[in-house]
Amino acid sequence: MQPLAVTPGTHTETVVALVLALASTTLISLAYVREHDAVGDLPALSLRRPLSSLRLLLGSRAWLAAFAMESGGFVLYVAALALAPLALVQSVAAGGIGILAVASARLAHRRLTKRESLGAGVSVTGLLFLALSLLDGGDQGAHGSLIEIGLWLGGTCAAAVLVLTVGRAFVGTAAADGIAGGLLFSCGDISTKLTTQGGTRALFAVVAIFGYLLGTSLLQIGYQRGAALTIAGIATLLTNALPIAAGTVLLHETLPEGGPRVLRILAFATVVAGAVLLARPQRDAGGGLGSADQLPTTTVQRATPPAV
Image: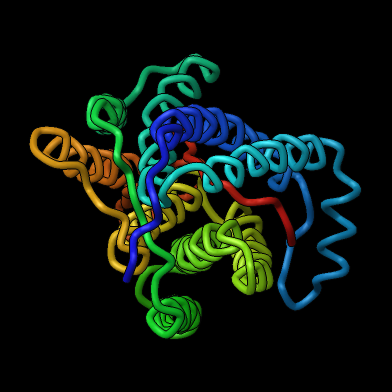
């Protein structure tokens, strides 16, 4: 497996890409806050009634405004993937959750909980580690094996189906929507990166559309069943963690040497840990996942175009 060549401008492109990724995660996360509020005022959405659900969403000005914000963030996300390795872009997306947690709490005029404060601090620390690890440049990657990529994507989709069928009885319908949505989103992200590699791999755009379409559909439905923190939080955790792993395992994205290598590994670990803290749903007195009125509405990011 031959690594992609590293040109003198590669490091500059990486820095630009991560700035775009941070702008993307912020814009999309704010869109999720508006999206959650918008669907809460609509009649029940369902995958069994796609056209009816689509009409309901397109008839909501609030949802359409969120759609525009999220789509703009997605364009920035694709641009970032075209310039930098998948794992780096996803780590910025995960770390940006901490910034959003603070911002959303300020907008809601409430104080962060202890868990949210810790999660936000860990996430921002991960971004700092990531920035320091970029000082030596030299980020590389390869195209990866199509067989391995196919097995990864197929296994992820199968896991999503399993969660939506058998898993609902164990985690509840709202959490199942978030988990399955996150799994499908991760397929979309990995496929989007493959699409940016050009050639015949542009056909992975079909897989990306499939993952984003179903993933976002589940997210919209889940918003009507639970809090944004429960649904989007769980989805975001899986969406960022799996592509970070895929970047290393499937696309053979290399790590820098020496101290920057340690910082890069710490960055990946801390941004995922921060996402875990911010995404973990609370449980009510009966042991079930908290409902929308039992959880704070801090939300987290997912770079995908909205759909039903």
